[in-house]
Image (cartoon, rainbow over all chains, first blue to last red; front, top):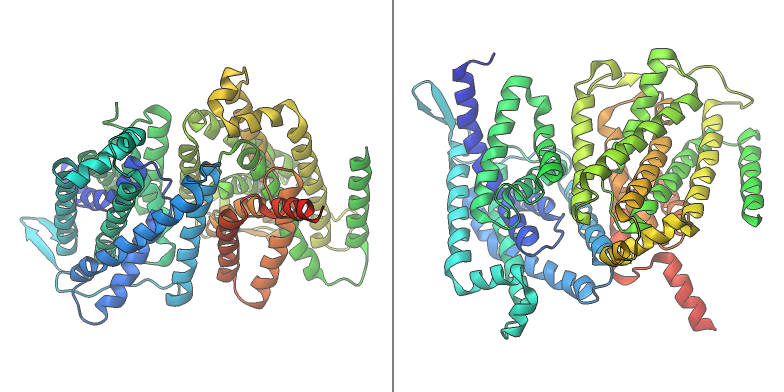
Length: 290
Length: 311
């Protein structure tokens, strides 16, 4: 049962899965990790991205292209979300904790139920040439859809890391996460920068959603399990670190894949939530936090 | 004193209704659910409303109550009251455990941790044959009806007693040292700690009581449905209802969750019967978001404003 070969295969698959998990968590890493907004609606928006991709791809457009096309739309949704959050909660600054959480939790249920009402509870998939076939190297088989997701995930992570460390706006976003008051003293408007960051976080979600439906069938209630996966990755990474997000995604992916292979798929959902709980209890600042 | 008289009158009323003939059985089925939400909303409010720590994991506590009842019933055919007591104790212990793990951290981490507990326990139950695993378990109700005509009537009355008990506990906490301490925590945790409030301790007590009451609300469920199954027991929709009702009713006073639960749960029952199950989650979600944005102090806040303006 614990043969080296099986473990090796589990690790390989875990790496592919892990990069994918990192990619779906990047947006949350920005919104929650950097900006400290309790963005519990993130997984619901992820599923929304998948469904929009599903609808767009009905016209024959490749799902990845759909994801890219959706990014500007989601950018605007993100800006709208933050604007609204700021005007109703942060500006009044009264008891943001409970109401902010309740607001985003409520929104995620509204999104989920609307998806159920429009599309029903059935699983949805997309069609593309790379879905269904696998790359065979020796005795190992890598499904192309996982490889595609792996590639996009890597590209997204690298792009965001570069954006946050090299560009003016990216550094400003990091700065606003560290000390909002200081930024205001420098003559910058923290609200505008946060708005931009939120737009980016949500835009990334559009492409991540497209990846989600490429990797496997999607159903409206799937956002619930992704609450665990995304928050697990973000907490594991130490809030707000992009490269940390990639490593944390890999840790989760490999752990989940090994558990799946040894104990069976029915135990898989507990892995991310268990890891999350463990981190919160033992090292809440994350693997790479100070 | 006045309160005790009211409670006695309310309970007598419930007793009267549940022994009276000629009422459709469905009334008791729906009434059970509404009373259950009164308990859940009240229990949620003890931690969420008074202290500002948002529990997203309500179904975990309900399920611990329900599955404890199942195990007690299956292994030693324990009577209903023992099941309820056992469910309450274990759910309280779960509350204490989650609290110990995360109440030192910021509120959002506590919230996420409670979601985690739901999924971990669901996975465990899915893989636990004794209580039926993922497929569920059929249960045969005992014939012991006390002096009621049907099981639904009896459970309805039991739930009424439990609801009155929960509200009484919440009311007592509100004006006690614990309630004042929790409010201090909500307003500013640092300031509370500096003024000598044992913040961690009172948060843990509140979390334990809140969890125990949710467990009590869940414990009669297997007998109510004579069936138990993980997917519906661990449904996160319970969370949105249990946190939506107090916030819509008003979190600052014990009557808020009661008002919210009575109004919303009744509305949900009507929507479920006339339209669909999905829509009743949507109703709570939309109302919750509307209230949080427009009337953050809930119905109680609206009443207060209206009273002030009419003076």
